[in-house]
Image (cartoon, rainbow, N blue to C red):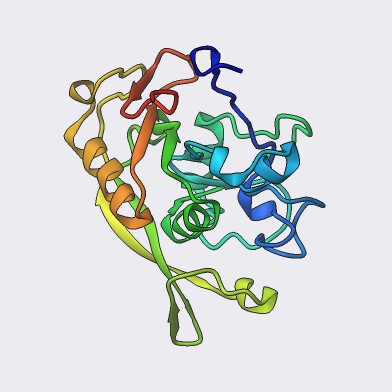
Length: 221
């Protein structure tokens, strides 16, 4: 195809990175590779053809089914996240487990998948929380980890190390510019960027397609 007729192609992953059979939380994984590199090998394109890897990440953390979940909340805060975020499996309808944002897992996944920028979704679900927590590390038997241990036995025993940030009482729902966000919400997003070593390319503030703040357009040359 002539350069003047070249088109962008979007490949979409179907499942979360931690369900990857090689790099995920084995044995609680799926039967295939879910990392971004699969887009190249699965379609017959070389890896150099991939121009931008966008990671989709919620402003908090969820998981469907069994498996390690260090930041899981089994209290009123966890129930509040699930209810406000309508956290039910798209296919199975199963209730998702909810917890605070796990920067360790997201940073690890961004590195493995070569993520260039993240789409941070559901920021509005955090509206009204007095205090927010972000997991910045793990501890097992007095030893601190900056990554999720490989062994399943250790994964099941990790204790999250949290950093607390003030929440915001104003609504972020429907915000389409940084100026529409409370200062505390902007600080929360910026802190996430620092911890995961990856920029926010798109910020979503409601289920509506147009309620987004586009920072980096993945389709721009």
